[in-house]
Length: 315
Image (cartoon, rainbow, N blue to C red; front, side, top):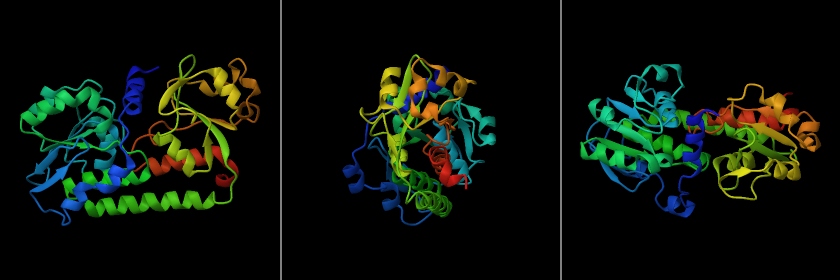
């Protein structure tokens, strides 16, 4: 498979879980400390526990993960974003920005671009912590965005970025629209019986899936779906035999590096006995909208819900 896709998935999968109770006690410190838009200098505390003082409204911004980039552009900050990762592909304008690397970042280049603020991500701290310290030592403000575990935490991260960039009004519009989309989806599923679902994140022979305590598992719970892989925690390697034993009603493929996967997956030995295969309920979903902690996540939830419950959303 594409190495960077697997690497990015692994980074997201192995990120430390943030306890919900701790988050409730320290909810959105950026919001709490900056009640008035444009009140600079402002002091915020990021996901790494580092306190940062932003002296002025940022005019030169660098993003170190696609989800941050999508949030920044949706907040109307496309012109202020001067550099992104090698794998940023949305919106189209992001692909035209200066590149700083992906899993291995060019921190010297970041310094040379003289950004006002760099938005990193908690999920990538394992590979970027030393580089972030290098940036801070050079006098560059780095805000580590929380690795959100559900929609509510995603809304918080949008507000975190908005507070620093003086775009809270735009964040209000984004979050309100996302919440409306989610509510509409869940309202339509109110009387639906749950279905047993398996989500596949890489092709055989090394099939990875999302277990319990993952964003994917949370999304399935939101749309009347039982994650058959929730017997284990986090992202893990699952055997074909276990998938067959679990006998899901629906199989969702969340990768695109195998062009004919919807043809080859049902032909795996023993898969002909799985209910999802027998009922032609094997679907491919967009790997970005269903995983990036960004405004398009609500679209991804709808895509998943439509695949799992076509009888509701095809009407």
